[in-house]
Amino acid sequence: MKTLLLTIAAAAVLAGTASAQTDIFISGSNGDRVATNTALSHILTGTLTFSGNNADPTKANFGVFTGGSFNGSPVTVYVSFIGATGGIKAVAGSQTVKFVPAGSTGVVPDPTASGNPNQQVVPDFTMSTNFQATSPYVGLYQGQTYETLNDQLIGVTGLKFLGSPGFPGDNVTSQSLEALYLSGAQPVAIFTGNAADQNKTVYAIGRNTDAGQRYIALAEPKVGGSNVTAVSAVVKQWKPNISGAAAGVGGFTVGGTVSAHALWPVETVSGVSSQFAGNSGFSTGASLAPALTVTLNASVYQAENPSATAGYYLGYLTPGDADSIAIPNGAVELKYNGVPYSQENVRQGKYTAWVYSHLLYRSSLAGTKRQFADALANQIKTVDAVAGGGILIDTVKVQRFSEGGNVTPIYF
Image 1 (cartoon, rainbow, N blue to C red):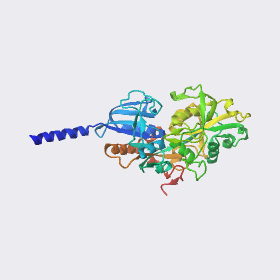
Image 2: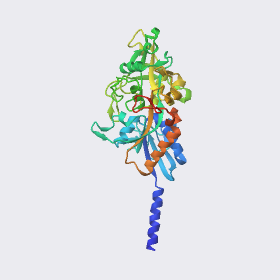
Image 3: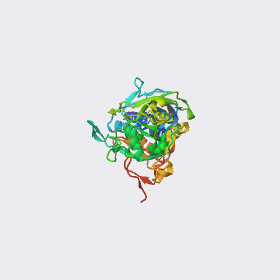
Image 4: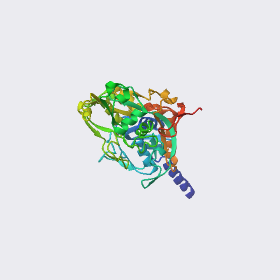
């Protein structure tokens, strides 16, 4: 009888373990938001419910999937797309990230905004558009030791350069981008070669120091010189004061006019200061994209050059944000070094402004969480990288080993 009772008790413990709830916390880059949240809906079974700062998971930077199961066990998955290098910093340094609170329902406020409800947890793994080696978070950095992470390459994401409505050019070059981002402003003529554009001014806008998109936008054209990494490059980007924005194509709030702007103020992101005015920027591609649909008032572009006749912004976005927000609402897509963006041009090595998507975790990650991370990586790699405009990695015929590194053929 005693043996029978022990057997029953052991079975009860095993049954309880098998059905135990597992909470999984994922940080990562905003550029991987669409592919990741799409893949999560595919590998989780059951009746899923999503709560986040947007009702649509593909548009939400923060949220939680509840009601799902993985390999027969109940799983709750939290996502916090704080930035490509911010995610690496948190996972490699075992540092907490703000997620939406447990028990969240419906649309909830951004958990990273001051005063909003949140829970602070060390992420289990992160999605990133950067190699860890490209970030500063390797080994000892500013008194903190960062673990070398396991890295799986799971997709390829291109980058588009765009001008605000009416921009008269159709191309950017490595040298014109370097001149623009180091100085903050340039005559449009250096982009068009047209003397009529010498009294038109273009201003640089972009992302903050946490953003993987910023890294490729600076590393690919070697902004600051070939010996300066995207980590250490100091740029001048503007923060516009926009009025009159309204719902546009796709329901996004876009357009409006800029009557004043200033170099982006110094700010601290993921514990790292931007140090210099202009060296930070928008926190997400979704917030940068509307700024590429605005019109600049004469008071802005004539402040430094009274004879200026027009002014524009120039920036960079993933194809997902460019194609859904910026371009349908008036932004002008530009070639890069004379080559138009297309997935086939990326695949063949003609268009080189692109990055890998990565999934990274600590070597200590184990059990259900590691199995889940590997399953998510495989789902994105084989199916869902195309969500949000990405490219399946196995279709790409070229390779590189760092952001902005040489692009070489795989087959040669």
